Amino acid sequence: ITEARLAALGSYETLPTGEALIDYWRGRVGGGGRRAIFDALVAAYPNAIDQDELAAAVNLSSAGGTWSTYLSTLRTMELITGKRELRASDELFG
Image 1 (tube, rainbow, N blue to C red):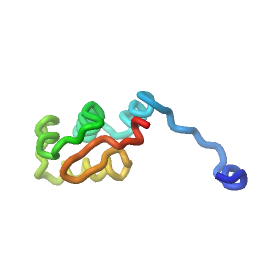
Image 2 (cartoon, rainbow, N blue to C red):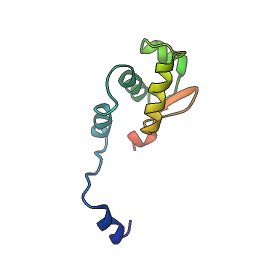
Image 3 (spheres, rainbow, N blue to C red):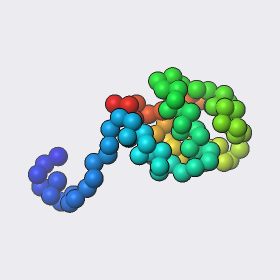
Image 4 (cartoon, rainbow, N blue to C red):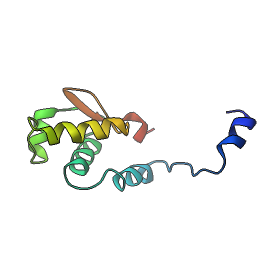
């Protein structure tokens, strides 16, 4: 980033790294199903988990609209990747 762009940005807080980054996002994904999905994928990293297996592991139905909403939110936050096989984003561990 150029000095001019950095000045235009103003003050900002950099994201933490390592386990602190995961804790940062844990506090922002919310509770319930979204948090359970996030935690399960973080625990499995770098492995992917099939959607149906993940849903069963977190006591949710992968056929419901709520499941799709949870995944959409986590994808939008760029915390998970994949469609059928899901995994935590590499950026959480970089």
